[in-house]
Length: 202
Image (cartoon, rainbow, N blue to C red; front, side, top):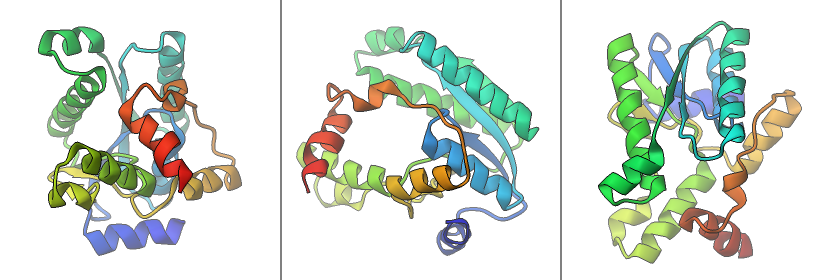
């Protein structure tokens, strides 16, 4: 996993060893493993965590977990609270879309102001497949069938080579603690429905 991580970064020209990377860390297994891999390769990193206030005490627990993780690893940590449901209502968009817009806008603000070169997210191979299926269902055409790109401007996705199972196995083998997001098992969200009810059947 460690060698594959470095090789994927090299093959996709995601970043240089000397770059400062702002890691989007939710507390879930993907982002926490991503953080561990970056640190093991000696990158200078900072953690950015969004508290969308959508899961009450669970959201606050995620925030506390990330703060503790940053303290233990002695890296900078940036936390922001969002009025996600109000934003969704005001813009007449879904809560998920509002959360996406809010976080990427904030990530870029931190990246620019604090001197980071790139923003890294923990998207994995399964996420990319789910995106392709989601886009196919929406009828987006051939462009939508490309999945999630490894690099978009200042945003990089260094875990796209790894499956969710690979990442969970790495966490288990290296005794890495992480948080479970209960909303990931709910099929009321379109992406979760695809994950649990469509892709799971194949």
